[in-house]
Length: 262
Image (cartoon, rainbow, N blue to C red; front, side):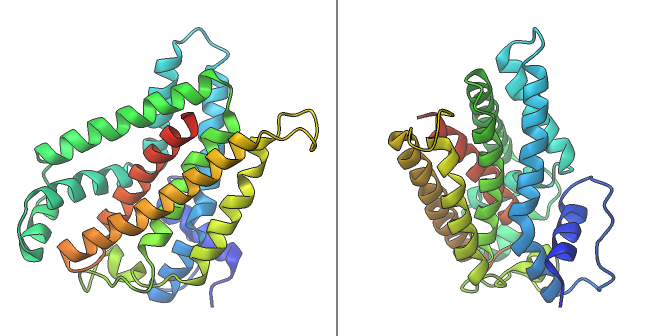
């Protein structure tokens, strides 16, 4: 059995460029894959903290705030080796081909990016960059980190037991269908994590109810989107793949920043 500490360390090793090692001597299998997915939002917390630190640092320069948003997106891509962006592009191309699961798999594994993939990447990253810029302009550093972490919860939802892997190999085969209790746990944690958004810093008696409601709605919308999007992808592709999970992360982050800015 993989310990929580090992799971987080392995997740950081798999999902980021941070030099933490694998955290486990276990051969990758579905047990380890499930542990890594259950720990994925913790990776989002680390990435969110790093992105926030970068945005905060850039806020003390003369750079336009729009450029700050773009640089935060670049930093996130570098820290994650761009793997989620690759998944987003491949998933968009696969869904755009309007073919049977076999044709979708062929398009997604082709190694090239088509028009659907390019358009989806540009639009999603544009939304993220603009959203990060807006949060930075308002000094909403906690919200920025929260959005990045929340996006990873979307991927955990995508690996629920009801959805099986599309292929017998690859990352999807390691993690698809492995999560149940962790989904509820992380959603509760996210709901609790919204509470600081409703405090204005003058004391616990001064609560911004509107900010709390907005935060909880964002969590609910992201969860609902992740559920429906991965369900749709599983139907079109015959199951869940690693690319779909990467796409879910990026799309959920984009939805989160928009929701927090409304």
